[in-house]
Length: 354
Image (cartoon, rainbow, N blue to C red; front, side, top):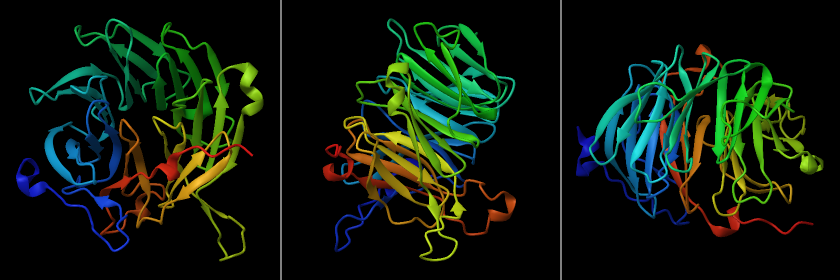
């Protein structure tokens, strides 16, 4: 299989403008559910509905080479890395959490739920790291990889759809718009439970990076994002805004076509963030100046997942069907690809507040 061979390398598209996004060679064969960059090097883990996790090496100009892959027994719904970039974790519709050892190339099962694992995250706790897994069985389980059983389990108000971790903060979004906020120094109980500030189903929560104040962004199926601060003293700064909408009648500004916000990624250095949606667009935003920094040209299909690399110089995104229109939207020949964008500083740097 050429995935492991030299033929998998791609070179950057050298267009006349010189800034085209670069397509990764040999993408998954079905929709892309999750992508995650290693915190130690420019390796990208990609989970897919084709039951696989693929690992690519990404060069500074976006060129790529397939390095490894391993399988679940059902669609892969999320991927993440540990702190030193030696292990990849994935959760899937086979109810299993798996670990791939980058040095040995061996996958092993490390977690188990009673329903699909929708989200996985690494808790960089002092002394030893812990794997957190969130499932549609309405629990989050914490796993010390040296023992086969979870070290702790939390019962959620409903099915886990999304969570994000910026140690010690963990924010969890479930069905029925519940949002629970945890301090991972006391991981067994939420210290705050709120109803989402958005009126429709939660699609994604993402914790602020590079921020003085603890908080998170929430994206919903209804083309809207909320910025929420954890501390009550910062509540005056909470706000929400519409995005990922289109005019039903051209130039009418009716914004009647509404699309899901599929992912939110914070820049690791500047604390600005991206949103992506079922409309095939990506935007960069500055939450403090409350302004849009950049809009990408629309892709030929929904954007399902996004990620910045460890220093924010590369931004990867998956273009594939997200089932936002159900079975009828799954047309033959739907695009399925991963793109890499080379970030320019002016795109991702914060603006001065007005």
